[in-house]
Length: 69
Length: 69
Image (cartoon, rainbow over all chains, first blue to last red; front, side, top):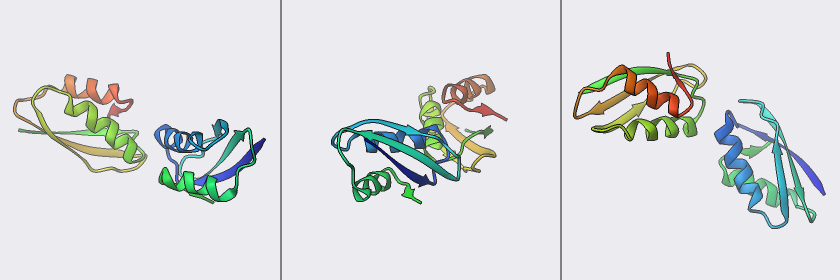
């Protein structure tokens, strides 16, 4: 199933990589798709084999150094 | 001795890290100091035990994915 979150603060491909890496580490995550809006709010689609909670997604995003808008 | 170059295209700390890493790999480089101007032109001061050529600095910056302005 897919969950979409809005992530703020990413500015470049390195930022996208950091967020993607942290989200991919969550149990059951199959893919992460980031539509970078540099310096703005970027939609991030997480596909997983189970339902992810908003809390665990936000924690992973924050671990990467960004925040859920 | 110190050489200052202007690097364009860096947007965040990850970009600074990439440029710093590539420049640090040059022979004789002792330190790299980046004053990030996100999305603009950032002065980068390279301190080395020998004189660096503009060509080798530019090559390292380009290796990191950015360009000397």
